[in-house]
Image (tube, rainbow, N blue to C red):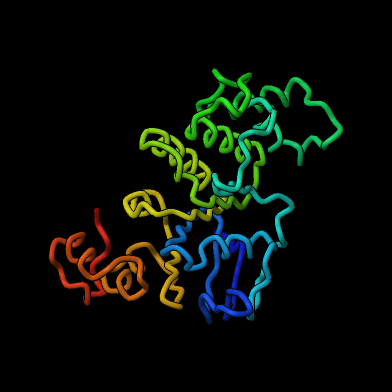
Length: 254
């Protein structure tokens, strides 16, 4: 596995608020990084920094192989205007613009690629529907199809399951698993700890002014989840069936 993205002694936040300091780690190809934390801990801020929309307060950001020409990105549902007058197929096809160009029409091979992405995402049968008629799950599947078509080595997903049911989430997680198997690096802002355990290789836990990175088993321990304000001591005691939240050896199992 090759390093795709590295940070060294990173501090992130805003002029009047430091979210965390002194974070050093790297994201490698073929891995899925879960970014977790309570509201306001800096999850979306971290993603914006990776997109070069926000500069760190201090520290260095490196792209060992060079910044990818294309970065797959799926924003929070709240940031997307579903009233835009466009069909499902056309929204997904936007992901292919990097390869085909804005002024070029899709050829037969391009249309086949779009249809294949829509089929994998489970929305081929509604490809001619306007997006304002879609449910939250259908819209999220369409946006996943757009990311599939971006064909990027690095994929950033900011709370992609916030508006979907469990069946849709399970289906979208299979797409994320495929991306990792293909050697892509996936950064996933997520709240469901069970999905993290089953589908992610690494975790970045933000909160309490701290940032902790490592394997899922090393990061998601009861004491750390409490210390970094992801859950209360009573929640940890219930989740861990009464085990001591002071132990850093026991991973979070649900």
